[in-house]
Length: 232
Image 1 (tube, one colour):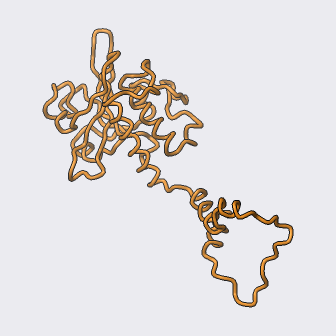
Image 2 (cartoon, rainbow, N blue to C red):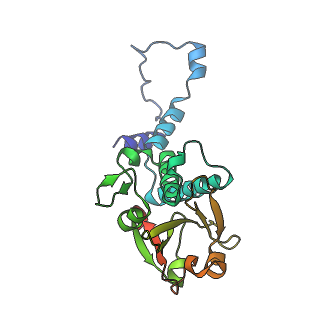
């Protein structure tokens, strides 16, 4: 209601002739300095409308994806000091990129954890397996799913080792202008002290060793995944 009233005030026409002037009784006079320091009343009202008007879900999603891409790609040059070394692995890159994006665009969402742990409870931490099983949903494993990928989606693998399975995630960065730039993946290889890397998604599908190709013929490829809250 407050936003509506402010909007109506902004679009109100001039007072008709003969209208009594507004009384200034009880209003303290402003010095010239105060008058210069304060914006005109119409400007102040307009700022209030802009500040109070909520961002549409579509705009918020676009801004979040853009920030996720910027944060992830920045780690390729050098990891942010705010990204704790103990958190630097493939899942840690996704957690950090998402959390930083939300802090910049929709900080109110961080009042509760973004993720769910292995038991489905809210958590600020989730490993690679928990991320894709609890906080992300599968999009598929084929070419159709790959064509629908957007920034912030995840490519997931499960490699079998003698000590047990190891999950590995790569973050998708899809350019806004797909006609002039290819989709990329950004990922941390997992080893302590390793640098974040990036590559072309299509090249990964055709040139990488089979166990790292995001194609249906690769049994280690679990599929493409999207954050649950971004499924609309």
